[in-house]
Image (cartoon, rainbow, N blue to C red; front, side, top):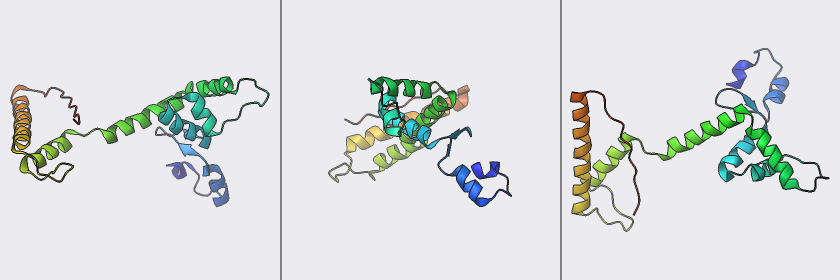
Length: 163
């Protein structure tokens, strides 16, 4: 945390001034508010020009091509290791939040098998859907038992599609 890096006897107004408007990356590097906003906007748009412009970076008004100036600014920001690392870390967090883990999938399959989940029309799952969920659960548990008997488990990737 930032406050633990500050001397305890620092004047509160100095602490506030130093900490106000600063952000910290996941590895502890400080970011300016514009850098933090640039990172968020770059993740959203995947466009360094638009991200630099909306983050509030200024270019000289005498430039004929402002997009070129914003492109240069975006490129220079992306050249910094701590910014690239923070973008990667935030992308990983987004992916981790969106992807179901194995336990979540097993709980879902169990609920479908037991008929606890209804479809978008508030209708119970059909018998064939419940049977398919039971077969899938059974297959996974057999794989786990085989892995325990025969050594380390192989890595399984699950892709769920909504049809």
